[in-house]
Length: 460
Image 1 (cartoon, rainbow, N blue to C red):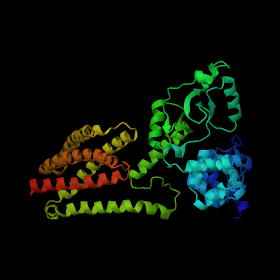
Image 2 (cartoon, helix red, strand yellow):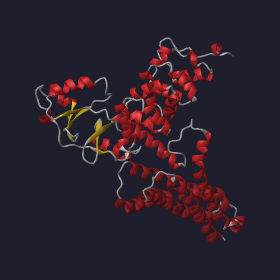
Image 3 (cartoon, rainbow, N blue to C red):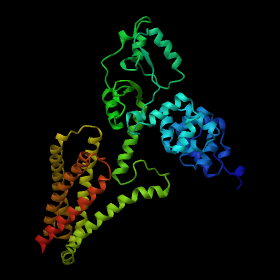
């Protein structure tokens, strides 16, 4: 079937934009050229961005040619920076430069930072010198720091300005700056002196001096090297729409807005979950197969090693298992319940660490409490399991073994579920990094050893 004959979706007459399903049907039908230019322009940039991540770079360019420069910038800002960088690198030089200039400075920096160094120099040499310098400064900061995610589009005034002068100044910035929540007051050297909110400006008299109405007791001021996880905690603590970012000399460098923090929270949450399971922190379903395999394989090899260790424990009791096969039947039950109990503790502890609600002096108390919780759960679950084995299998001696083994195994699992992330944090490592794998390995080994050891001692 030719491209012109390929079927593509007929959207309802009341719809003036495409849904993601509509766009995917165009791609599956090889009918991207049949997209309606005005309709794609009205489609949410987020939707278009999600669609483009599923396409090869040449097809992405086909879609983006239907949009003006501002539209392209909006779509790219919604995409992963690596995908956006790949698109811009494939554009003609003149168009790529215009897009970079249309993006917010922080978005430009994120995208340029993911480009090959040669492409960075090639594009920034043609970008507006002021914007190029801003981008170079932003990409010099660590990617996961306040400096790496801030925007330099900040409304500033000297303390000598009147309210009228400040409002007139904001009018000139309205089209250039996306977010103006606060006006930051600085001295001639750029040092942060205070802030004025939009409410303060509205309520003040036009002849009032900014220095007289500004707030000088500043809260939520971030150092440029503050880790992005700490940024989210500060934003949550103060409930501000924006946080100022300064250097070590208190010179104002930029600000971080609440929408930036939402992105960070989403990124951190997904990264922690994926790392806990041994996948790449920023891995997605659309990544190249070889890249995903490369990221996952090392942790699977660690998992293989731990599985051999657990298998080695079982092999020590091979003779006992051959004499009493009920041990083989009940063995996975103990290990499975231990792993689940540890997983519950692990999830709670990692969340607590992420929220900043844990201090080093809390470690002993947390370990004892979590081991106690798991022990009590082990008594309840172990009793039910023991009754089930005794009633259904008529092995009351095995019931006693499984009851005691369940308590010991689950108590250890609760302890390990708290100890592993706390230890990783103490070692300055990510508490979420493959903690689930380490937990599963240790609970399997302990569960098998305890159950088979008790079973051999009591039954044989």
